[in-house]
Length: 236
Figure (spheres, one colour):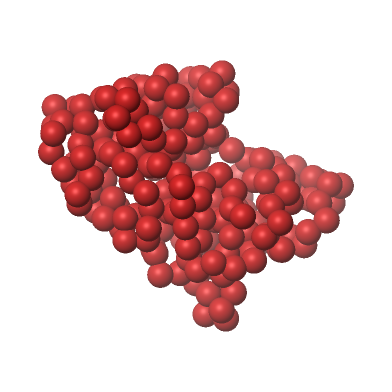
């Protein structure tokens, strides 16, 4: 089992024709992600890596029925793009850009809560269900299937840890990047609950940083509510 996404998840790429959007579309496809369409206003009818491009989210939803979206959109325009995806009914949004304006981020999180949608990020590397689907920018080669779930605030620290356990032939179930901006959509406890319920996840690695109280809150939750072993690494 995996949490949040799997091989059947139908993915949309908002900002697919930009440098980052097109490059990472190719990387996600190479990993096996089921990308059904991309968005780039004014460029509908084109294709990127064989993925059809549409002008609006509603157009691709009508034809392709995506479940999730990843946004490669400049930070000042993320709010409008996220609202469009949420209004169209998508339930998982991965916000790659950093430094989204604070009030825009607050608006996105409030609207996502109304729509019962999951926001990963902003300023995240994404999430991956190892061997099944990747919605993000992490390097493909390190994410192999195995029994360990990982939740991290840091991208580079997470890659380092995943790389080290992969060298010892220990793979991962799902890896989630919470994001590094001041306002993010998920917190450690949200993901820990999912890992505790996932039968394939046998142990969890938590990667934290300085700033805020999320790690202390996670520690209290782990000691009171979790039975699976959790290894925490806090840096900064």
